Amino acid sequence: MRTNLKIDELKELLPKREPFSKEELRGFFSKKGIDLSNENLDVRINRLKAKGIIVNVGRGWYRTNDKKIFEPGLTPTLKKISSLLKKEFPYLNYALWSTNWLNELTTLQLFRNIYIIEVEAGSEDAVFRTIKESFPHTTFLDPKETEWENYKTERSENIIIKTMISESPKVKYRTMSITKLEKIMVDLYCDKLLRTIFSGELANIYMEVCKNYVLNFTTLLSYAGRRGKKTEIWEYIKSLDILEEPTIQMIEI
Image (tube, rainbow, N blue to C red; front, side, top):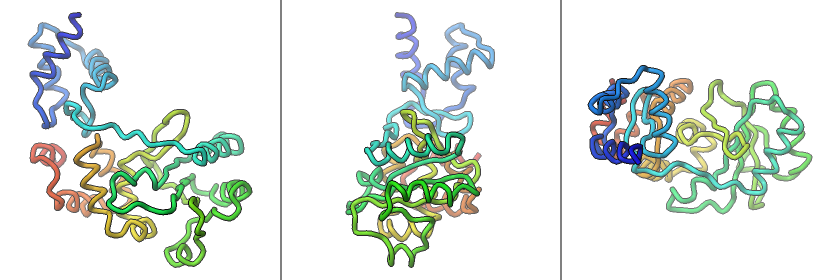
């Protein structure tokens, strides 16, 4: 009962729609007569995150959770691809995502779904041959924009295999290794083929994600930096005028 009371008190005391630091959380517990070591404070933070009370927005920064957690749908095709990779390449570093995850974020729906398989450098050809055996007419190895227009099929599903950039943000989701939303946003901006496919929808996607979904901007901008676009993407996000000023200030510290 007391634990529930503390959570209710925490919700009342913490700022709404504004980021707060780890030390501010420590201060809340201290006011209640609870002095925590760094280790114990981390345990409390993890419990609050597990309960969905707070979420990360940057390294050491949090906010009360008033947004949705990104929970993508897993189609039979995606599950089959994942099973093939686990069976044939049990130690492979890979990540999957599907363009139909973005349909609720766009004004126009894609008629064809594209599955993106990103794999560690040096394994692309082997993975391509394996996936092509099961999907012979719909699998492509890192096509350029002109190749995609010339060779893409009219089938409802197509598969693209690409080289994974080191330290790409991914997560284990229902036994499957999938691409994090932060990485998808950066890739949509940086990847020429994806940008061509989603031309005209980029601003809509960014605005919908920033307004409605939990984002870790440290993760997003760190990955954007590895793609050489950190400053450019951050300026683009700010130009959309969708972030609260405290969030912008926190990110720019």
